[in-house]
Structure formats: C-alpha cells, structure tokens
Length: 485
Ligand code: GLN
Image 1 (cartoon, rainbow, N blue to C red):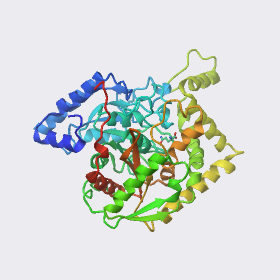
Image 2: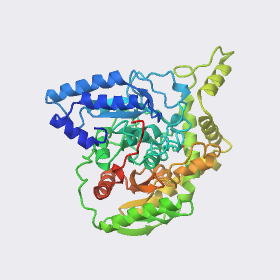
Image 3: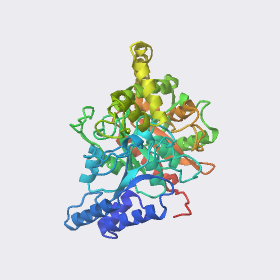
Image 4: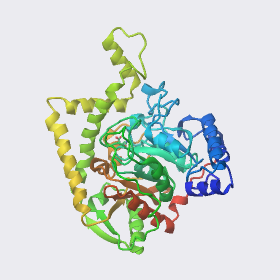
C-alpha cells in the first residue's frame, strides 16, 4: 500500500479497494513501527488523522468525494495548523499551538486530505541539512549517516521512506528542491505568488514559497492543484486562474528547447552528479528535445546576494518573537531588557541568531547602501539573466545540488560551505521563478536530482516535462531499503 503514488491511492479509494481509514492506519502503523527512527516528524496526529479519514470515507459514501478525498499527507511544521503544535523547528515555538490554519492547510482540508502530522525542518527554515532543527536532525533514508537536505528535510525523508505518500514543503532558497534531490523524490517550488503564504511562518517574505513534495510529477500536479490559488489574506498572492496541472502532463515534448547554463556545470559540481545529469539531458534529447547552451552570467553572485536579502528579511520577520504574545519566555526576568534578551537568546539557535545579526547589520544606516541596496540591484541582474534566457529556450536544466547527500557535521562548522549547497537553486527564488527537482539517478547509492526551471507560471510545463521523463525512466520508483520497516 505504501508504495502507491497519490494517483494510485486515489484510484484505490475511488474503486473501494480500500478505505481512507485503512490507508491512514497503514501509514500511522508504519510511522509507529519505525518509531520514526529517521526523525521525520515533530508531531504525529493519529486521532485527528483517523477522524479526518472517517469523515472522508463518509463523504465518499455520500457521493461527495473529490479527486484526493481521504488521501493522507504530512505538513512541514512551518505551516500553522489549528489546535496542533506548530514549532517551525525552533525552541522558540516549542510551546506554540496555532489558533488558526495556514491557507495551504485550509485548502488541503477543503479537498479532504488527511493530516498525518507535522514534519521536522531546519529552525525557521534556515539550513540545508536539517541539522539546525531544535528537534534533532532528520536522517536520510538512503543512508542514515547522511543528511536529508533542508530545510524541508522531514517532508523529503518521510516521502522517500514511505512514511507519508506526499508532503508540503517551503522553498526560500532551495528548501523543497534540494532535500527532494538528496532524498530521491520530486519537489516543486512554484512561481512566487502562486501559493498563499498566509499562515506559513515567514522567513524571507519576498522569497518564501510553498510547494508539493511527492514521489512523481503526476502526484505533484495533483497536490499543486489543491495548494494553489489566489488568497486575499496574502497581499503577494497572484490573482490569476489556476489551471488543472494534470491536464497537460501528456503533451509531447518534441521540439522543446532546453537551456543548459554553462555556469551550472562549473568546477563546483561533483563529477558523479555531473555525469548523471548529463545522461538525463541526453535522455531528453532522445525524446526529441533540443539542447541550447546558454549563460546566466550573474549566477556567481546569487549566493552572496541571497545571504544579504534573506537575513535582512528574516531579521525583520523574526522580531515578532519577543516572548510577549507567544513562544518561549525566559524565567524571572530582571527588567524588560533582560526579558527580551533572554527570551530571544534562549529561544533561537545559533544559525537563526547568525542570520538576525547579519540582517540587522546590512539594514543598518551605515551599511544599507553598501549591502542591502546593492543586493537589490544584483537581484535585478539575476532576474534579467533569466528573462534573457527565456527568450531563446522553454526550460532550463541542470543539477539541483552540486553534491549528493553529505555526512552529518560535515558543513556545520563552515557556514559558507553549507550555503553553497544551494548554489543552483537560490537564483530561482531571487527571480521568483518556478523550479522542480526530479530523481535522475544515483551516485554510490545516493540519489541525484535534475533541476528544471521554467518561466513565470509555467508550472504546468515543468510538470509535463518531468512527467514525460518519468514515463520512460524509473528513478522515481526506487525506494530506500529500511530494515526497520
Ligand atoms: N538553505 C537555504 C538557507 O539556509 C535555503 C533555505 C530555504 O529554502 N528555506 O537559507
């Protein structure tokens, strides 16, 4: 049962082969049996899940079922979930039970999806390895000595290990695509504004975007249908109609123009990963696509630009966590200053503090022009690179991550090496473009992700291009072997 995709689960539910309660119980049993040895979940919600599953079965019996009624999923713990702990991977919110649902969660509930629980993540989504989580790091199901990627590492590992058939994630600089690549699943970051950010705890508001994490592109299309749409509660939500993302999956990709940015195949790219990506691109060529060498000349500035913009926005967003209204509050403060200092000092981990410091620094009066303003100019140049490229090509392809999953501890002492994990994903966020990572092969038993970047609101095309590859390959069907299960 747990090897079934969303599409297969939906079919089985529709034909009455099994009920939502059975599927949900099956997943809850797996989570329990594994004692979540991978540490994918921060919170599991079995009672709620069974209750939702029974309600879904009832809806189906009444003839009111939708396409995904009764299918279980997991939510990254960055999404507010009513009456359920919402920690964002931080001690700061360890005691926070949200009084409302994020719009993504509301959308999932309206489509009668079942919530299995909340997945582990880097603290406030800052990280590329899940090692910054207050709840301990998540293990990569392909090799438990290695990181699952981050920040949506819990979602990625849960889907890969069949501890959830699908999950939600968020991506500010690569946090859906990079863990998807490192865990061998499919992860889509939509165009900025496509999915509502309401109730999604903000890291860097101009970059954050939620998206589906699934085994296949077809499943991602189904889940994106549910997640997307205009939301008046999010002022950056885009008011344009949501197409049915499953409708164009079968279009032929003959004549598709694929741009290969030479900057994405530079010296920083691991050789094994390069050769897997090369094979995937050749496969596309054999399917009738045309390859075009392109250049995105400002690529090398993307990571440094991001590490000014993202910390600047985070220092502002995280100022709300002051111990007054919610979250961690220190014991017996001496005075107001002590109260703020210790509440924040105790509540946040080292990476979050580093970002707040950098952000406050680059926004300060003396340095604003030199750093923040300059980063905004670079951001424009980075977007212009893509604009230029999309005049000649339909999609852009390259590796999602420069390496496969790395070992725990390997990059924690050197933040810059950690930051470079997102060298190929970050520019997409700065430009607001959609990108997907799909499984494309293995190096030494560890999955490799192929990244496909599309023009604004071309999610349907990205899913189509991904699905056509998945029809002819079976990398996305491979599952890690886990003794415990
Ligand atoms: N790894 C990047 C960071 O640490 C991106 C995180 C994300 O996309 N949320 O900021």
